[in-house]
Image (tube, rainbow, N blue to C red; front, side, top):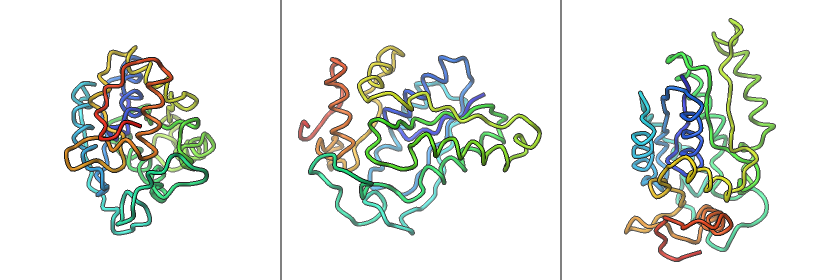
Length: 223
């Protein structure tokens, strides 16, 4: 059994597809953290169904009470292009929080592996997508859980860690996954379209262009 941390985005969808290809039975955890792009929760449900997960937990966790991010507070999402440094769309400690919750579910369902779709190439400057963070969390998981103490810690799998967005798009196609089910945009339009201008939209469109694949995404403004 493996647990997929499933946001509804392209990366987590492909991570789940690779877990299934590896022969794992799947559970999935999606965090409803009161993000402004709530359409991704519906995408996560579609992806979970396509991956035939045995248990999909959508866990409410209101990070808007903390704020501090354009995804959880009334802060404009940048639309000027991918910049340098850590962007305002970074949600403080998000992957630390989310992986901790996923670790709890993994112990309950008896999973031996957690799949998360982080990558360090097209990662928009997020510190909690780096391999150093994953290695540190893996060490913590071996110390903080019953499975770890008993000598069989849950393993954190990051199969997309060193992939570009183009390679991830190609993997989705190879796995037979409909990338149109997934959601990447940080600031969807009222009509339910990808804005086309935020960092995530730009990286997604650039990936499909570089992969030479048709982009199934519906953009309000094409990047």
